[in-house]
Length: 604
View 1 (tube, rainbow, N blue to C red):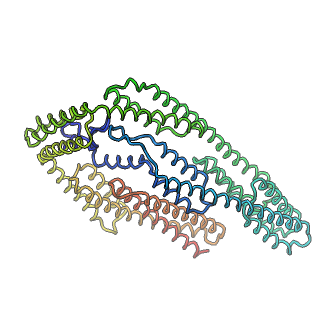
View 2: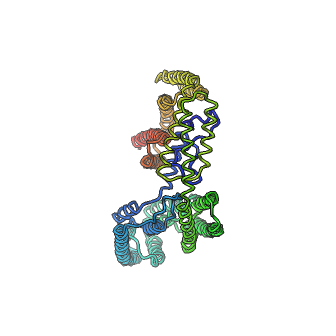
View 3: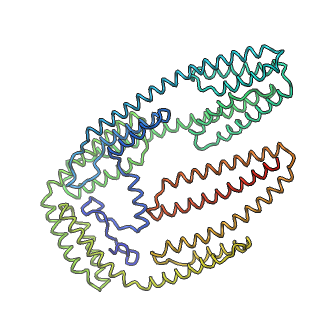
């Protein structure tokens, strides 16, 4: 109906929601783009069902116990509790039946959770036994290294065994957390004793010290980067990995040990400080959320339900309750105990409110009958007026009828839906007829379509061997002209847009190839300058390898994100195309890095 034409006449369009929904049964219709956004929002707020929750539990139960976290199980339990204490979402007089639960599904859900907990407990017990075994094995290795450290006269014979023991120690898994620090201290002591006391070949020892220094310096650099990492949780987790890596690496030159360790400890202290501040901030946030939720509960409980004796009073109170519900959804969690108590308090009031509201409307049959008669009169008037060609007068009448319809209260559901369909049909017919009169606009859109096609054709005409300056001029001019041209017919918009962007992508790919060639020439020139210097070439190869791996990870991330997008909407399809263009560009960059590595390998 003409709600789609409201921009021309300043109308308040008719809704596409069911009639008689409280407070929102005559909301304006949305454009196709807004409808897509609304669909996404509705999906985000969609309530989970028992079947969906049970399917999530089955999926979790299929995972390996090592991959199941306590948060996963708690989240399922919280969703289950929320589902069985859900707030009624429908305020209408006809939707007042109590929620019921399918006992077999609930029993199966509890059975699956019990199974998960049993498997997790068994796995944890097995891990504890393994850690104790690892502790015994590592203690044995430390004892053997201590014996080797005392045999100072047979370094050439014992050093290979020492290296094997170190590798065996590093390859052995985790130990109980209470033993980890003292174990690492004893392991470091015997390794340092072996390196300091044995009359080892100086060149071999210096080489070992140098490699260990490089490895520990990399760890130190990573720790310093983590001090400014925005994701402090990830930074703290990564710090634990860095400490494990540090412990596995052997000693460095004696004069560097203390300073290197102090630098690493300083960075670690900063990360731990930020981690502690993060959780203190979260505690403060939970307290703030508790206060805000308490205020919501108090504001709701201040509503005197006994004084709500008219539809308008109930509608006004419903708006207050819905506003409180919307605000509640935006507030994060409070502390666990307080959060559960506040939620039960909040849910108890909402349950009582909507139960009494439903009872009130069940008792309002006479009012609904009067409303039905008033809406019937409006429908008959709309059907009589739908063939009118007096566009201005008829439009004003339809707008007024829309306002009258909105002002009328609830009607019996079945009759109300029938009247709504008739009213919508009459409105749509009138505004469609009016829309057909707007031929001038369509002619202008056709002219715009022709102009945009000419812009695209000019871009497509650029030869493959064009110079960089020619390509850049074509891109600038083409994009400027395209932006200056107005709207095109809706049915041709996507096709014209896709063709235009394909032409742009082609020119950009040509620029990328030219730039890649220039970069390769520059790289070959730089390689000529360091050819023969194996150390510099090795470092350059390491840098290129890390850059290539980063590109691969970026590609995997985009490809994973594509799996969460849907091409059923215009916005989703546009994002899919944009992600694919990015993946293609990154793959081209990865190919260039691979070619550089191959060139470097040929010269090493």
